[in-house]
Image: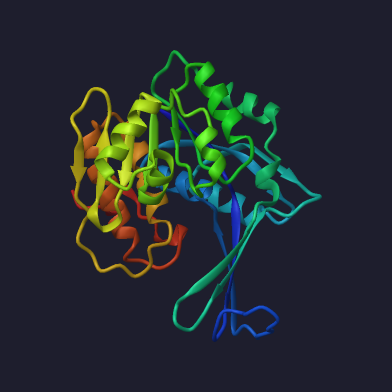
Length: 295
């Protein structure tokens, strides 16, 4: 029951300062930490911790060994990851001030070196006649539109998380996507409405597949052609850090669907995992394992 994630791999360089640096200003940082992240890596690790067999395809630079180590620690198959010694990995430079506000500069690095040959090699690992799989991608790599089109042409099951949302996503071949997972701002941008129910209907009409709309503390909405709309409430928790909560939700949701859970219990497990993640600091460090969730 494999999950093929053609996704981003980032190093997060976090600097703590008294205040966010203003134009023309120079400030000393009193702390620097390096974390593994990127939506692709986070979602792969979440799915693996939820019990899925995960193959991750992507690109790393000369500084990418910590990311490989993080994936290997979760028994994620990394044979589809290519390393480029002549370039840096994707990374984010994150300033965090004493009040907890942040400013982020995102550099795609080798995440934007995805080739058509890589896409073909990755998709070749899946059998379209075996429905127990998903091809997952986000919007932090290049050639996302070509990947979605190629997967659909092969009859493979696709899941797409259009984050970060950019204007070109509207022109992507969303028709035929089996599972589209969006938050409120992404749904608004794609469906031209701020009404969650209307957004569900419009996005389903376009893709023909299932739609999951995450609502933060209000839980998640779901609809597809075979089920009535579902609303899964969020777990009541006191959040400490919401980093990677959405990625946790996506990884757990796909893992449970691949394990054979119907949509409603899969959504319940995913919301419970996301709720536990926000009670912990960090990104990958906050993602729980399946056996940590309440029964």
